[in-house]
Image 1 (tube, rainbow, N blue to C red):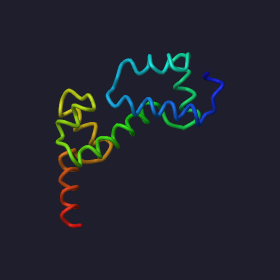
Image 2: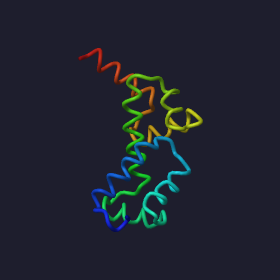
Image 3: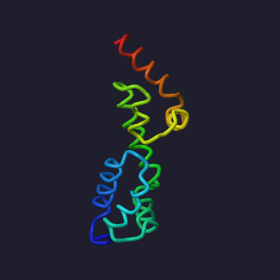
Length: 117
């Protein structure tokens, strides 16, 4: 299956699996290996060759977009829990790495923009 599918189909399958796995699942690697019947390093290599991004980068992108959407309607703790973070400090640090501000500041900006609009 690995070599029989196009690069676009391959990436679509990967993206679907990453979206289904919002938490950092240790068995994601096993799921990918089972799906493609190839080793994880081979899967990562093909993905990076096709997209110019690592699987980790794409997974973080998907998780971050999910976090931004959920922070519009849920509290930080609920979003943090959904994404599999155990400590608020780790979630805040991860969010700040991607957005430049912490999650509560992001929520305050969202609320402020809603009042202005």
